[in-house]
Image (cartoon, rainbow, N blue to C red):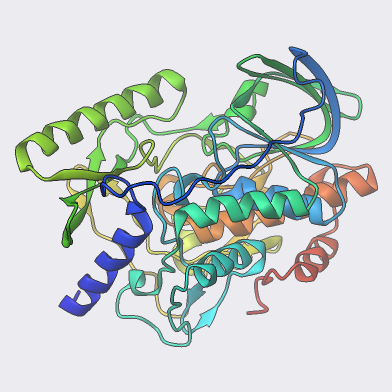
Amino acid sequence: MNQDTKSSRRRFLQHSLMGTAGLGIGIASTSEVRARPVANAHEPEISEQFDVLVVGGGTAGAIAAIQAGRAGASVLIVERGAQLGGTTTTGGVAFPGLFDAWGKQIIAGIGWELVKESVELDDGNFPDFSRVPQRHWHNQVYTNQFLYAILAEEKCEQAGVRIAYHEFPQAVTETDDGWQVDCVGFGTKRRVHCRQIIDCTGGAEVVGLIGFERMREDETQPGSYLYMLGQAHEPGRNQIHRLYVHGADSTNSRTVTQANLTGRKSILEQVRSRGGRLMHLQPETGFRESYRIVGETIITVNDYRSGRKFEDAVANAFYPVDLHTRDGVRPEPLPRGHVPTIPLRALIPKGSRNLMVAGRSLSSDRLANSGLRVQAPCMAMGQAAAATAVLAVRANTTPLEVPLGDIHDLLREHGAIIPGEE
């Protein structure tokens, strides 16, 4: 990385992460807005009906919800946190990729639309996808994480998607025409009747709750906690730091709590030892790895490296094999010209009906998953899963029985790139 590239990347990250935190700037103005009344706001238990329930509002989930809503389905998205975007926003990895491979764009659709608008609104820049970079990260798209989160909410609202923050499923029961899902939040018990579930939790938590098989290695990749140290009146001295949190485990609230406490404790120690001011701190650890489903197809690293064209491919992917360990990471670039694909059957838990996943919990071995887990392919998975779920609702069938041609047609209608049509 040359010095100009380093400086450019640092300026972007400073702009994206810092905002006005810790600058000592006074309040310039005060404005007001009134929240709309919430129906049945003070009733602790409610019951609702939707075509599609998306669980998890992260990288894949937000895109899945928008796609399902735009395709005419009634949609609820349930997110345990306070915003959409996941790794890009809460995790702070505000440079999603990769949308291109070998001199052309291979992933587009709703995820790209959201990234593009957030960059344009922030007066940012785009890499030249027609050029093959020397290093894969040269073509990352630097995004304002704060704009991304609120633009995602706007697009959900425009698509008619309902958002339920601070809630998570507690029990899932199969019904004659879909699922009954009991969700819990503080002061809220919500019973959801839905036709299709898309599990975008990152660890296939809903799949595990139902009882379908999942897989995970004993040791997972470290999480990353991003923070900024610097001087308030000397912006040039501000620096982004990444703390590896080894043993970070996103399995449940207890393990996530432990990862966050561990990361923050270490950051506090570094603030004290290094001096300077803590200018920014992401809300929580960004997790790389958790449970994956055992699907109707398992993508192997050989499938991934060779750019296998699955017969039921619904999305492209592109990223080095990228396994982080205690010894660091040494990305393994893909052979020139190879573009991996993601099959529909890798998004469907083996033996299930009316249930899909999207995101890093897709059915794959560990090394393949180290490339598939990044944001652009997860966005493409979310859109593909949602298109399939909506078509299943329309035809009163299950995702595995939806004709592949119909899925491709709906994805094209909403701007996605179909594998083989780049």
